[in-house]
Length: 336
Image (cartoon, rainbow, N blue to C red; front, side, top):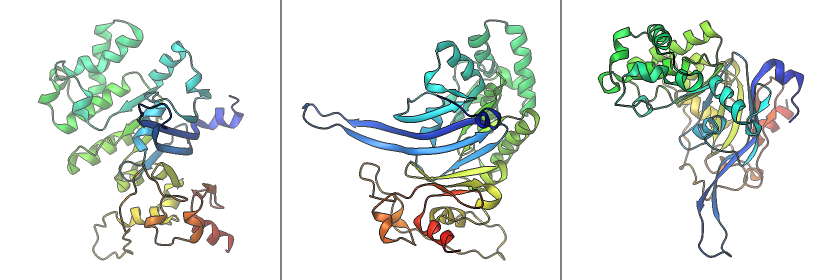
């Protein structure tokens, strides 16, 4: 795959026309068709070096599937994922291993990501053994330094996961992800399992890591206020499609897509004197087994138009640089 000079210079990750479907049911009779569920539908986005991109949307919209596709846990059905000017699906074994050192994944549940039978410090330096061989004394020293950098003490390293709090376990997982000095960090709902009092501490830790190491982030979350605080840009997903994508200062202050407007309207406001329009979406999220025709959001959309049920709007770039997939938005911009 040919990569432009701009991609090499600016973009660390480029996702183009990415799709993923899963085989749901394979019928026994050969003349019966197979049943697939289409989870990701032609997604496009890119992340520049040092940038933090937030990926938001309701549960089941495909956010975690995108993360697993980037990590090569799943193989894409169609499209491409280019990391550091290399197409990930075409890498050979040694190249994949080198790339995996540079891309690290932080899971939603820190307890499930840790081995309950091994002290956490050994789990932190285990990736170093896998990639570089055994040098335990040096690895322990580096692990202790990382524990301290994420706000833990050396004594925490000798504990087992069940002896730590949820916030401490998540800090251990972050330290393990950072042990290989990655360039790119995928954070899949890293604060959703934590108490509210701990969430802001973990988000501030990510901000510290970004400032000190210049690391690139893909931050997947339901918490839009945290995404606004941490990220530079945000992509909003609905049923496997990106419906709006742009810089945070523009997207949060002036959302265009009706779904984005509804999500932002649901962010709690701590000042009772501040009034905001209340947007209530009717109905439930349709099933991916029987998705609506046309725009998948149209059964719940407050500004639905006849063409919305007939064809899927394209994600087009608007004059202010953001992207939106909505006929109403595109028509409004044409009439300005």
